[in-house]
Image (cartoon, rainbow, N blue to C red):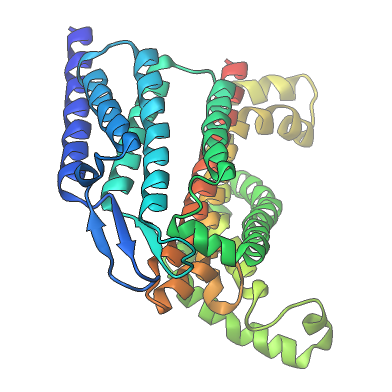
Length: 388
């Protein structure tokens, strides 16, 4: 009965993915051919590109992937077919962009359409589903992430994708891109580090003092209800006043705009998951283990460092994972107050009606958030497996 139910669920997933892919291929543009970065452009369906060998190969592999999802039970074979389809998808968009770009043209833009992005997502889900069914170990999941990142890197390094609009935007802003990438990661990782230093002891204290727990968690929950942009604005006034009246504060970079209010806001948003998960993790430790340790003469500090924190660490790390993914996303909003990061490209693109520039900021943000989630999930599962 269980095996029959599993097959039915798989068939339903396959039908949804195949239907979505068919609709995207038939109705949504695969690529937009634009005279410049803000022009509406001419939409081109994948079916209109079948005169190109790469598009024909992609179509065949899409059909093979659909067949594999619907009828094949071998997860490894599905993974191989979907990976080939993923590579063909990247190759096709690259060849199509090169074919439609006028010679020696710097103004023309070839933008991936909705059909490309839907197929990208569908193939990604097929790959993810196959990897889950193969039941990779935690470190093998990280290796798979590295492998697919490497595959994308090969396409980028080959120059095949250089005629795409997002790559042209990158070419004109490469120095700024890497500067903002560093700023984005520093803000995200810096706020995480500060939140851990503050939140971990605070979580331990809340666990030890139940009366304090409710007050702290309610206060941190209240902060979570404040929209990010509003919190940035609230912090600008006191920090601006501090920078004006305390020269030492201004000298170390504390101002009403810039990285200081962004960092403080990110830390405030990060505290609740870390404090709450620390409390939950410590509560999950079997009290009899503590009693046995106390009976052996261990002090409260020794019990904390030797028993409580190691056993609660997977739950605490889950909170850290939530914070890191959240921080990577929130840093984009910090660009509005001069905090830097990929949000600069997103808001510049929105202001100039240049969606290619928006993608230049959005795509790496999503990639960093996704990669962080995969890596920390693998670390958490590895620790839990070792503990078991």
